[in-house]
Length: 320
Image (tube, rainbow, N blue to C red):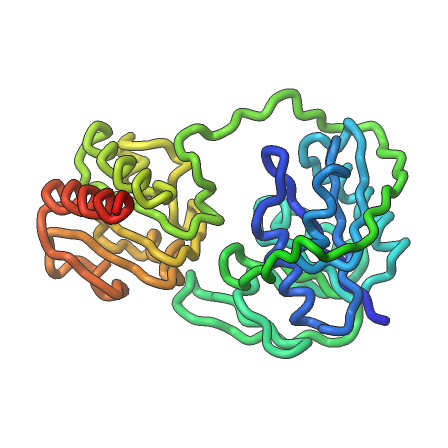
């Protein structure tokens, strides 16, 4: 039986949703394959079974206080040992900051193939991914041999959770070498309660909001919708908000179900980070704004009138 490894990512005591999407991707690659989840961290055994409920056949956990935070040297060592033990045909993980860093390193060490930022899978060997800042898509076909795949969050739907599904969770003892780089502290971003890269709804603002104080009206709309708040580079440069919210070519790439662009002109650098959103709603007083060219729905008008009204109407809908 062939085998696919899926690397789970843990954040704030639970799995990032892209971990479950990666399981679904592994199933698409080969329905008959054994899907083996891999969870690395300081204390992860208690949540490992969650991967089974989303489709993994069994899960390997590796625990150490040296694995509390991601470091390329420790994760590389652990994953190399897991790969050597399991001899998989493929390794699937999220196209996150961890996946973007570790997948090329491991592929290079093993002389393996790598297809990154995958948004769709066709059959067992063809992958779709965006190129030219999202202006086009290419189809990549891989040859036989070990392959690394990183998938863009929010593109390949996770399988439905099955609470009754059972599978083995086994601990692998790995003696993690002393780290050359030690992370002393991690400062969590507190600007948004919802992770931008995995948010299903994003409310994003640009320079049209004119000030930091005005930018707060997006928080109210986002709260009602259960959305994340994003921003253009222009809004970040103008200090309306934190750079952690930046979406675009030099920020985060997102693919939510709904993207509400408020006061955004539609600069190509920003569009590169959000053009693959499933539904785009643009609000701008300039009817010639570039953002309307990619929007599914457009509202021409003063955002300071429109956004509060939208917030109020959504609030009424939620209450009713």
